[in-house]
Length: 155
Length: 407
Image 1 (tube, rainbow over the protein chains, first blue to last red):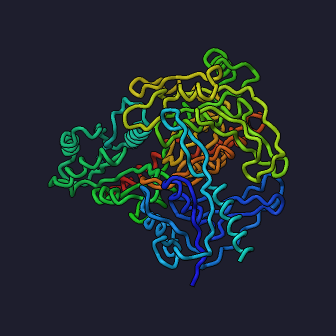
Image 2 (image 1 turned 90 degrees about the horizontal axis):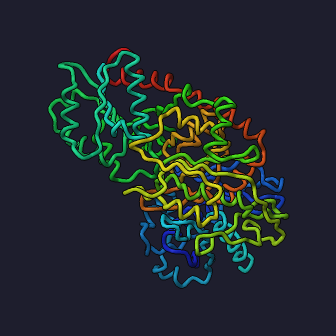
Image 3 (image 1 turned 30 degrees about the vertical axis):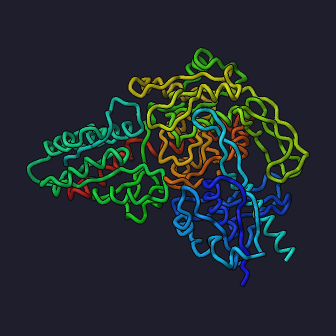
């Protein structure tokens, strides 16, 4: 069986670990799409309750935010554990432990149904004034939603 | 009822000491015998001896620990070995600013009888450890209050160099990693220089990007929808009052703020007070400076409580705060909340404020004096619910309950 597998390209390991939260929002449909301008916005994530909460504010364009649906239950995330963060622990904490696979699994590596997308980043200052990259969660979610839609259209 | 409060040196201007001093004052005002035991982690045995010396021959005593868990752990481990430990009820007052709770914190929690969180965020984060109901931090609303117009005008003109048109934005707090003074500086710089674009299609604001050198590079597209139909922002007459340590101190994970001020082109727009926690301003002087601000910005990524947000609110100053952790739990009505990106770290998950959300939040206040006034009034009203007097009453009731004595 070929499962749709999402892979986040690029980004440092820490940003890809942060992308787990974006993936969790995606699979639960924890985001809105504005009926007016079409922009996707993730719901607020509360680390204390591990819940996503829909925003009550209207879209700046005046359009109505429409909640997304949860995605196909078969979608998995390929999250190689090569960084400083223990991915299975974070995935279990987010409640998506069963959604995360490792590229070493044969059926995953052989899959031709992958959705490849980028971890979007933005720049912040480090303590010395140098510039470092951090995940941009809204932009990463938009990338993922777009890539998944394009994948579905191809299939 | 005897109560020992274990906390850092009360002479230091820290949030922990402000809280510990005020809880002690409130309890004493209600007839409780209180001993303040200073503990910085260096000599746990002496601190434990001081606790033991204060115990009555019979009956339970309350021990309330305030501060970071790491320095308290050796003290609590020592305390656990003392034969009189069973006559102490030990509370850890936790300004929890992280989630999920790491395994090491569970070991620490085993050493205390009850954890009292300061916020509902902390209560939720600590849920596996079955904490007590939250008791909030307080604020002295008779000291932290809106200034009279003449005093305010004098401070703005003489200290802050602000003319009538200027909007003074403040950052008051320590220069430590989680408080993110760098993001407060960034937000002010984008607004000051008009370094942002507004999209004609989706009406969202995109802050300009940082260039690799640390300065700002103009955007020509909308970050949200990708449209090229964008309108450049215009500069605003904003001044920034920085009340913090300008250089990082050991263990702070803070920023070299003067470098950031230079990189962001804010040299002419910043007035800085280089904070020394061992020789801080008198509280009434600090309150007067807070009351002279138009807006306070605190874009912390995991703030447990953040006293300065509450203190500025009590002064009638609206806040711009990150929509995460402690501050939104007590300041939702007196602040503009800024959405952020969850960042997974080895120390838990933090939510880093998005500049694309912080800039419109600040712009909305800078451009609208009436909105600042209305939000400042709401902030003051919300802060009054946290005056030390009712908070002290909560502590008195709680401690009487756990020691089995009538309040």
